[in-house]
Length: 329
Ligand code: PA5
Image 1: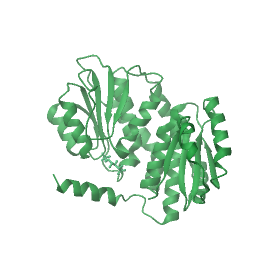
Image 2: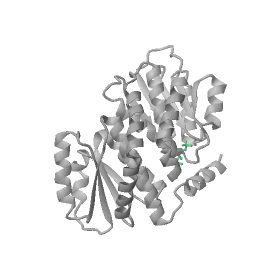
Image 3: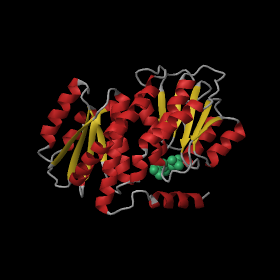
Image 4: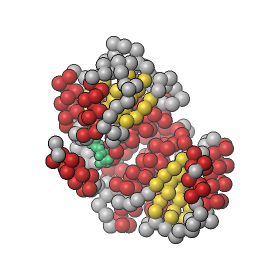
């Protein structure tokens, strides 16, 4: 996993060249909304894209992480099915329903049934390299391809794609410093339950870190966002627990009221949690900052897996669950 994480900037470069070469045909109808179906490591890319384009894309963007699609998916929808393996049953179930609605369908996958179905039905598809042993390590492929699909259908300009390109330089320059800092953060999180807080415009980064802590480090973890958590979860902070560690993911340009909220939060929560960690992003815009924090977080989870002596790649329990469901047909 450390080798896969270290290749993240290189993956972004490869993803950009795959995206540039992809052919996405125009739809026969005007596009009024976007729907992305995808789970786990293949669903998180859509969370990022949704946040990255929200100040530019003028049509609603929704994400489905289950079996069924909403009534809003129809002939005026861009519907993207994203699954690294191409065999995730919830995504396949969504795809079967999408097929009946006359939507503009695009598949993003490394292979499996989804690519077979795209070929069979003549849908546009982008096939990403299949030789990565872990879907969650392929975040760069899935998020960049989704951006290209939106760009090629004239739903966004090239601005966000250019930001991804710039973030490669940032990550390459910062990687050694990030690794050193991430190792120290991991040491402070060892044997604790991490609780991640960030602001609402960056929830995808917090979700990503939570999922990576779950899957790479084999630990439980939760996250919430500010300001919403100020209206509920904050009230739950009443008891001192030694094993809680709070991580704030911050940005120098966070909304100024949210920055103050985080400062007050910290003051309240420090009465109940002994470990409070603040991580500030680097970068010039939302995309660069998010990519910086993703990479930082990925390294934290790898160092945590080393501290725990667990294999950061294996997700046997997910495979077991999928296998048991598979036996039922
Ligand atoms: O990281 C993982 O292995 C999982 O979160 C998978 O991404 C998830 O189970 C979905 O599988 P796929 O990405 O093949 O659709």
